[in-house]
Each structure stands twice: as structure tokens, then as C-alpha cells.
Amino acid sequence: MRYISTRGQAPELTFEETMLTGLARDGGLYVPAELPRMSDGDIAALVGLSYEEAAFRVMRPFVGDSFTDAEFGDCIARAYAGFGHAARAPLKQLQDNHFLLELFHGPTLAFKDFAMQLIGQLFQTALARNGDRVTIVGATSGDTGSAAMEAFRGLDNVDVFILYPHGRVSEVQRRQMTTVAEANAHALAITGSFDDAQARLKDMFNDFTFRDEVRLAGVNSINFARVLAQVVYYFTAAVSLGAPHRPVSFTVPTGNFGDIFAGYLAKRMGLPIERLVVATNQNDILHRALSTGDYVTHGVAPSISPSMDIQVSSNFERALFDAYGRDGAAVAQLMDELKQGGGFHISQGALEALRADFASGRASEEETSAMIARALSDMGELLCPHSAVGVHVAQDFLGATPMITLATAHPAKFPDAVEAATGIRPALPPRMADLHARPERMTRVENDLHQIETLIRKEIAA
Ligand SMILES: *Cc1c(COP(=O)(O)O)cnc(C)c1O
Image (tube, rainbow, N blue to C red; front, side, top):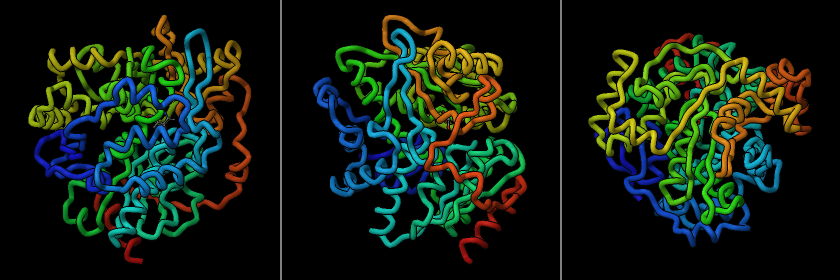
């Protein structure tokens, strides 16, 4: 299995190389040169399997020779052993023909654990085998960072640095990063927004001297291995509602387009998905782009669903690559326009291709709060604000085809917004009850590449 860059100018890599590299050297994102297919028989054979067995079957073809069956199986087993639910990703009925896929039973209470726990194990296995050491740097709007610190803390061959926007993550998110005690894990609070953190991360990857010196590796959803791990729960959820014999639709609370892109991959692999609905909060660049064809950044307005407060949606590049017939030069041109002028226009052909797979909607702040309240009163369900954005948008797409909305975080991760909407303050699960008593450790940094690189050099030399 070979991986190619969305900008067409970087070397082809194996799965292991792609995973350890993150961003391609031409600034693009890696995608499989060809997608493996799951036949109807392959999909039907997933019925009744454990999550781990299904994960092995869905992901195995992507991994190629990078891991043996035994190594890969062991990594999957270790990744999900710490989850607080036997099904890992249980499906719950919410309304008529509307289901909630609970993705918040991992150690940091958000869906990011599905991918991060697995790539922690895969990194450890690959690096230990090769005797290598890497520096992982991630940018987070809150949940990626906590999931990464949790997955990589204490690993021998890895230092992990997480950039998060100072003052713009919830207290639970912050504490899940700043209370990690292991010396190889570092929380960096940057002045600015998530987009600033992500931009500095990209700058580090494009600074080849620094990148090679510290052996930089990325675990943001630009890392294809992350997206791959998320493909699995689209299969398990659809199969439990009758796939391959009955199609389903998904609504996905979206920021960086990573999670919904995993759904798109599942569809391309052969899973019968009728609609993939992009659900955005008031930071609605994806909804506007799919509605008008103009992808134009407006600056981020902080919301009660902070993990989706994003205007430069990295993984959208992967969808554009396919929509433009895998023309890397065309994608490079669009990304250049975005960088120079803050936006680009999607060609008519590409827009039609995107609309064939993706529908979209948005939820305002008021609509999100109202949905949290209504979900509790009418459906008996306490939703996190991100999941509420999804459930709100899904209302416009309910019908004969079962709709599955992804519940991306546990309500206790965002207790202020949930309490404001319902009067109920959701409690953390017992295993995290002492989070507010643990000591915090973090470093404040300015939105300045040189300062951040100097700090990372100093810490890894220490
Ligand atoms: C990261 C995150 C999202 C957005 O996921 P993307 O893959 O960036 O689209 C939504 N909800 C929660 C709780 C998240 O942590």
C-alpha cells in the first residue's frame, strides 16, 4: 500500500512512513494511492464481531507490510482496553430512525481517543523496532491535545508537545493536558486561536532544518493514520443497523473535516452511506463553502463548542483532491490562494462532486443551547455542545434512511455550556473525579515560530 500527497510533489511513502511523517514535504496531506474495497460479503461478515476484530479487518489492508498481523492486532487490543464501555462505540436510539453513536468512552472522553490511543501503540511499536526517537508536536482546539498527551505520556521513544490556544479551551480539556505528570509530555499555551496554533505547527513542518533536527512527527488529523482509525466506527455502526443490505446516513459535528472524511473513506470503500452531513457551529466555513462554492475565511468566533472553532479546515484538502480528480497541481494552487488571499473558489465540477457526497448545515449558539435543553427534555439525553450541533443539524435530514449522529464528546467535558442550557452540571466519570485536585504544569508561549522552536529544542536536550 503506497501513500501519495494531495499536492503531488512529495515522495510516495509506506503506511509506517506516512504515519511517522504527518504532513507531506510539499505541504500536502497523504492519502492512499488506491482505496481498498470491502465487498458486501466482507461487510456482512463484520456482524457480531467485537470492535477490535472489526477494526482489524477494516484497517488491515491499509497497513500493508508496515506491521505484522500479530503486531497490528496487539496494538488494537491495547488501544481500546482502557475504554469505559465494552462495545467501545455503542449506538443508542434517540428519535424515530435517528441514532446516536457514542464516541466518548475513551480515557479523555472524546472521539479523538479512538485514533490517538491506536497511533500511540503503533508509534511505540515502530520506533522501538527501529531504535528511533521522535518529537511529536500537535495543535489542539482542546480534545486532540488531551488525547495525545494521554496516549504518548511515558513512552520511551517520544517527546510530545501540545500547542493549545490560551484561554480558549474548557477547564476539563485544559486540566487533561496540564495535569499529565510524565516528563516527556509538555502543554504549551499559545497566545491566539486554534488556527494560529495550527499555522505555527505547519510552519514547523515546513522548516526542514528544524523538522529533521528534532525528527518532527505530527499527530493532528493531517496524519492519515488518525483518519484511518476513525473509519472503523462508521462500519460497526452501519452494520448494526443493517448494512450492507440497508443504507444509512451520518451527521458529523465537524471542524477540521477529519472525522467526516473518515466517513467518506468508508463510503468509498463500499459501505452503503446515503448522506454524509457536515454539521458546523457558527464557524461555518465548510457549510458556506458547500452551499456557495466560496471557501473564504472570516476569523474565528469562540463558541460553546470550542473543538469546532476552526476556519482553516485541514482535511478538506483531502476531499478537494478527489473532487478535482486527484490533480495535485490544482490543489496546490487553491491552497496557495488560501494562504495569499484568505480564500478560493471551488470549480463547478468539483463542487458538484463534493455535493454528491456531502450535505451540510449549521447551528448557531442559541440553536445549540436549545438543542441541549430539548435533547434532555424530549429524548432523555444529556448532550455535549458538539454533539448537540450534530443533532440539531440532523433534524433537517431525518427520513426513511436511518440517521446516525456522532456524539463526539462526553457532556462532562463541557459542563458550563451544559449547565447553562439545562441547569444540570454533568459529573465526570469516577475514574477522573480527582482531575480538579491534580497539580497543573504548562508553559505560556507567544504566537511566534522562533520562540516555540527554541523552547522545544531546549526541552528535548534536557
Ligand atoms: C475534534 C472534535 C470535533 C471536530 O472533529 P474534526 O475531525 O476536527 O472535524 C468535534 N467534536 C469534538 C468533541 C471534537 O473533539
